[in-house]
Length: 486
Image (cartoon, rainbow, N blue to C red; front, side, top):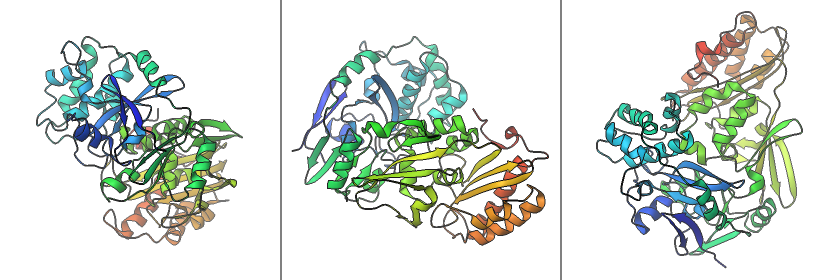
């Protein structure tokens, strides 16, 4: 039996019982609720004109995050709160400090992108809690918003100005009370036109519903699956939404490994990984925009299996393992063994990815990851490389090297690794390893890069890794990184 979707919006609890399960939040807000401040620019989560803020309860507290409403499906709002630009105006008619700062700093010209910028800045305003944001924090908050008019300078000025205006408090406690009344005790089954959208709450419920519907589409962050609908017009069939499974939201230390659940957002997953591997800091900044990282998940990026995904190479290089679960039990394997061929994975009927597990940092580890793309920010990689070697003095004891963009899957470079292990980390060893790398891969030519470019770039990245980690005179991170490790 179908149950209605319930969420909080504009001071009231909204109930939806007759919308398609893959109707986007943007479509519902604009076409059903006639709140047209939120705009559609790209329908793929790139331009930010559709940015909204979603609030949900986590451990009894309200989390508020900016997301792209153009690729988020309406049922994912169940039990949550939605905020659009219409919510910001104060009861007395005055503008919110974010809006007022945009006016004073002339942050809008044609105005189409402005609501999205305002909502991204509002998310930052709430996070700053009255403190003036640093420039790098502003840049990250606005990384998912594009403007063709202003050149961004007045918008950045507004971001620096907004906390200087008379503050407006946000009542998180009241919202927490409201959301607590919307939480469900059982799995939601929302059905429309013969298509069901399941929202299990526990791992046991997920195992059962997956066994009953092995062909259903698994959904977590919707940053990729959303485009299947908005761009490819695909019928997803039944959908199983993982975001509310509490066991999958955990980041834990277990058996000496960092375990990241399948529903952990990219932003949280990379934060945890960067605490242990500072070398990931630059990749984190270049991996998508903040709204995408707020919604998308690390496991989703891995399970997608894209040959140009940015997470798989460094996870493989660090020796990460993937945990699969079904009604038959669990399986665990090295991540590189999960990828069989292009878009082919070792995933059995009724299985899903439960978590990825990352080993603790080994003594003597030298680790780097690099991303090459046509644009520095918010672009798909032409080549993504990850190098991990363990040194015993000047000698390489262990080597794990993985690339994305060089083959049909993200995979290791076994001949290159063999050329390194047991050798001194020297110029001569480097030359042998670079020659071996040409035997490990036969990259293709596509719109992002030619085969020759990819191979030369991969070899040069190996050389860069040597320059940065050579025992006699390593380059400091400040000499090579665009973003300082933090």
